[in-house]
Amino acid sequence: MTAVVEPPVARLAALPGVSTASRVAAQAERARATGRVLPVVPALAGLLPDTGLRRGSTVAVHGGTSLLLALLAAPTASGSWAAVVGMPSLGIAAAAEYGVDVSRLALVPRPGAELPAVLAALLDGVDLVAVQAETLQPAVARRLSARARHRGAVLLSSGAWPGADVELSCRRFPWTGPAAGYGHLQSRRVQVRSHGRGAAARPLAAELHLPAPDGTVTPATPAPTRQEATA
Image 1 (cartoon, one colour):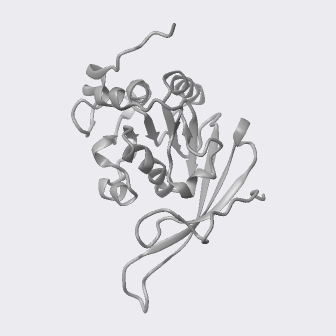
Image 2: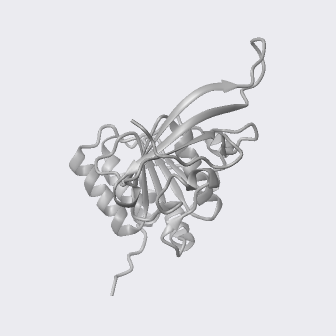
């Protein structure tokens, strides 16, 4: 029988720089979905081996924060809690524009030397934890992936992560919108490539609007594009 571990509410509440709704850990535990896969927006589903974010997995995201925020949108909108660690420049307004339910988003912008402890505590009580972790030693990173696997959380890394289950890379093309030197940015076309281990070993690629003119993430063609990625 697996023991049930209560979320470390006191430990989370004491973390420096946390900005979130009250009692995030306790609510995250109650809101934890019963399935093993957290949803993603349909345009990204075909790039993931389980058509979503499998609990316990580590996903490395390369190429900016837009793709990372797009991955957080559907889970938070469906009731999951997320945390973003070590990204002081990430804005709440930008997250909301990509569809993230910011009332279910915890921010720890500058964890400093406490980064491993902060991540470990959040993985105990939050569904998704996104981190900018350039300073983590590989051995520490692997221990945190093991903790995510044990707790059933999803660990999203902005940048490389040793032994990631899935790696998503985003190649960005110029924005559309401004004409004659003025106007609003409306849409950006990107190519997202996916590869990884196990079920994610077969490379996949898709061209998307990230964001589309309405702020959502949509395929760049009428139907989703899935193809084998080339070197």
